[in-house]
Length: 154
Image 1 (cartoon, rainbow, N blue to C red):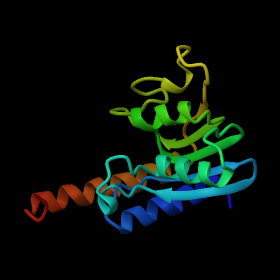
Image 2: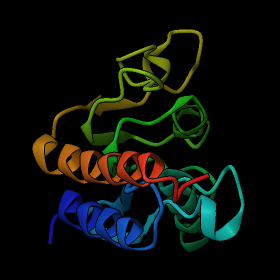
Image 3: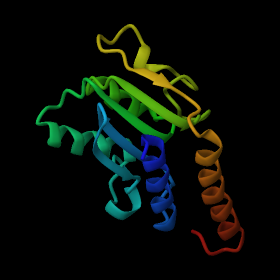
């Protein structure tokens, strides 16, 4: 199974748990290190983004914070916090599905991973299975709007 397929499965799990449906999978070469999804609500942790959970567990498995040679697949363009973590972990590559025109920092709002001010640039690729990634996000936010209009969401 490829990286984006795993990330999409994780995003679907997040959706079923009421989390924003973002999933990620971290590979070292062809070896899966970790796959996870957003868990901010579950853990009540503002940093429990899918990307950060994968980077943490991947570093544990490798026994090093340096994730050189690793590729992260994620269903949504990383936010500033996650894009910064990609750089600080020395990740080699990030592949994402849906762009985030409001908070995305791999080309949409800002391109943090390739900013020359940082000594460890991260290559990134956008649009991998974009329609599927976007569909999960659209479903989540559409459901939230419906609930909010019905007065069920506070």
